[in-house]
Image (tube, rainbow, N blue to C red; front, side):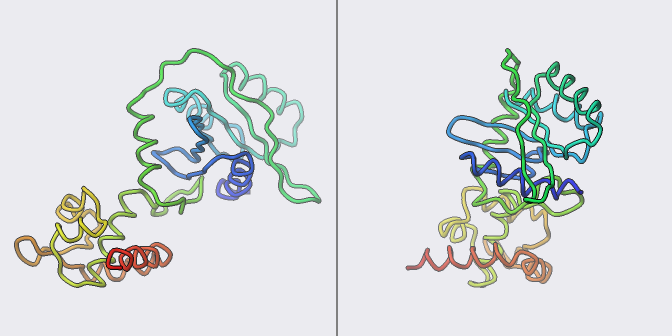
Length: 230
């Protein structure tokens, strides 16, 4: 079982309990929100030192941090894991496979304690989630292009240029590109944009080709664009 295989059952469990779920947010595998409740879940195929380090680092961001792992076959080791997580005040979700399919069991809740929260990092997570239209990522992913709020916005702007042709940053901003339109065009991190003249940009060949990698977002962007003119 891979880390990415753990995401879907954990995501379904959280949604069934009323949470909105986003994956790969500011280096966190899973971030779930419900009203004012914000929790972080780190996924691993086993309880190891790397997982514990990640989980304790996340405690500086939010009060409630969980780890989610497949159920250990060694019962004694499982008990040792629980005792260690209790001491670290970290919650535990177990993913198990049986004849009825995959299920998620909450074994431990994070213990309440007074922690120093890094409000800057917490705000960065909240801001990133609010900037995404939905979750397009799989928790536990590695070496893949993640759909961040920035990438979503760049895809929308690139789609506008693809559909409308050369356009000004002001026009793109006014039809939904957002306040950072000029910065996205100028910085051109992905190599998707080309400045034709002062105040006029177009999409590059690379941009046209890479938009094909995001068919769902491109389709959604075209829908939003049409709505701007109706």
